[in-house]
Length: 87
Image (cartoon, rainbow, N blue to C red; front, side, top):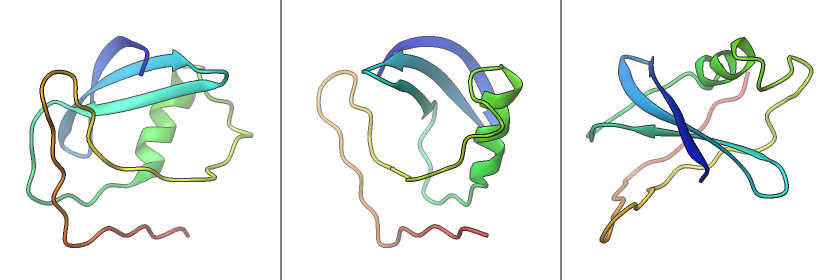
């Protein structure tokens, strides 16, 4: 997952931002509190990375992943719906 760099507020929530390299650069936004429902604009996350100079504007999104980041103990993600809208 990398090393915690900072805390950011995106989409009305607080996220710890991690940066690492596993043969390629990896950026993880880890929400600091639980939620029962969420609707996010992925562009907001990409804009944060480009404003830091970590991601070039010429890059484009090729995949989306969602799940848990278990740091200690066990974790669980329950969902009844997961979708993305690319426009």
